Length: 115
Length: 114
Image 1 (cartoon, one colour):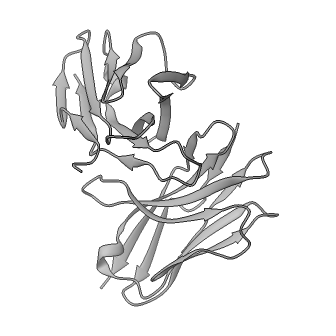
Image 2 (tube, one colour):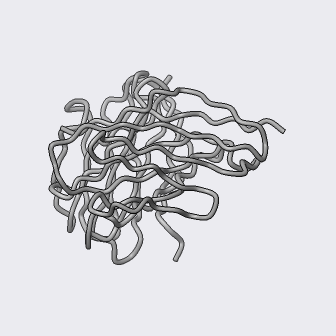
Image 3 (cartoon, chains in turn brown, orange):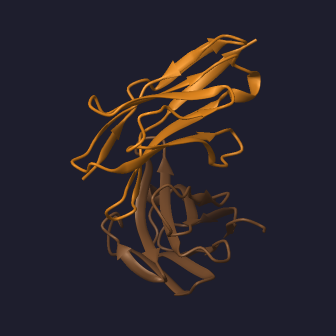
């Protein structure tokens, strides 16, 4: 298995532009998580899905952020419009939802820079 | 909501020595899971060790072991015989069995000196 696949690995954009981050979870995994990592705030959970349904989006910072999971093999995190303070590494992770001891498998992250 | 606190932003250890990284958490749940993840400069998140809260026995994975004190809500990581490859950011994490959310601490940056 190729693991969790995120694209792009790096994204540089200008303030006000729309940014779309993509994630392909591991086949068979039922849970998908989006995290944001910054020096100041560490790893923050933005949103997570179980069986393609958003369960908790309380970590989404504001309405500029949205996430979708149209099917079990694909998810997107969109920022529109982007701002410099959105610059961070965004991680996607998946896990089987068979129990809490299941580890999360992380993608390599997307380094987002908003100028 | 659960919180995870890592009080040591940075730690250093000499190669072949032992180091302990601290972690405390706050929860009202009686059953849950705890994890330590390692993040090297490559930025990949790697699971180091996991502990089920209902188990009294401390988890061990080769040179890595934990000291789990449920009453004190403490979950420290001990790395024995430290190697240069252990240098990384280490994150403590709590996973709820109510909503399955995984909450991370702010991390401890470990430096291994040759």
